[in-house]
Length: 400
Image: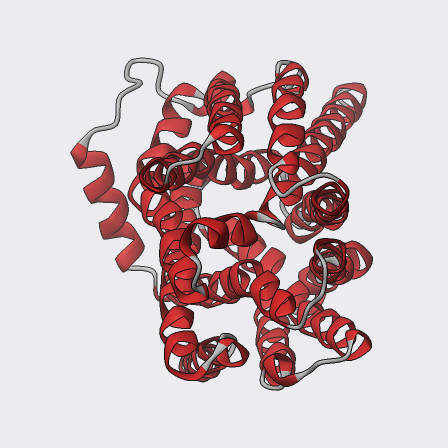
């Protein structure tokens, strides 16, 4: 007698998964379109590549400060309302980038961008955790990740083409208006957290909530190591998205080729993320995370010293194949460990880890670029990947 309700519940979950994944497919297209040219846009104001890395890090610093409170807030007031507000704010910021001609205003816009985008990534991971059935968490996270990465494949191609055919600012205008239209789809989401799991007596963020959460986090050794893996992974992402375009531009490649290179970097996520997620659910997520770090490290080493387009495209594809093992399985493993009512809070912690990587990455790479040149911008990633792999392997051996 309960089977019809169970089937209805499963159908609802899959509908929500597809709708949410579609929203983030479109969101990633719009974000990917302008992020592709953003380092080149910053270089117009700053001139030197190492300064681009430092200014780019301001957005991550702003997100670092706000990600944890936003995670706790999403547990209390619901995911959907916060997502709508964030989409509206980021549209305003992108339009301001399009109009801006001042270096001083640029600094403020970088900070505003970091604050406005931080809740979006926190909410995305928390929402997927909310709806993921036990035993299929790797699969659900990988399904969502595949859609999001499809957007990050299409977006850079669009952004590079718009910048090549028109001007460097055009992708910002493109993203602004389409993000506003995306808000309509968000209204169709069902906020599971708000309906069933939050405390309706309180919607504020208390200091005690944050202190208790951090105390609980410190008592979880595996979560701490997974957070370090997240920092390392997003350290690489920041190097790729900030210094990749500058490196390719130094080789005289045009914006469309830059967009193509960035697009190819997400192709492995499109092809393999879902099967890797299912495989991780079966054979163990930690083994695949270790393998992913090993593959990526080996192929990042020569990246900055390549010149031909074919070798650059092949190398970034293999590096991204390694990260495809890592990213979705970290999130899935976190979902295995933490309690459902704290998915938003822990998504905030791991968003803090991601933005820490985004902050440290450009700063560290800027130092290498200043001292050794643009070809060495990816070497700090090699160093941190080796250290992370060693610590992760050591921790797993201790647990065993």
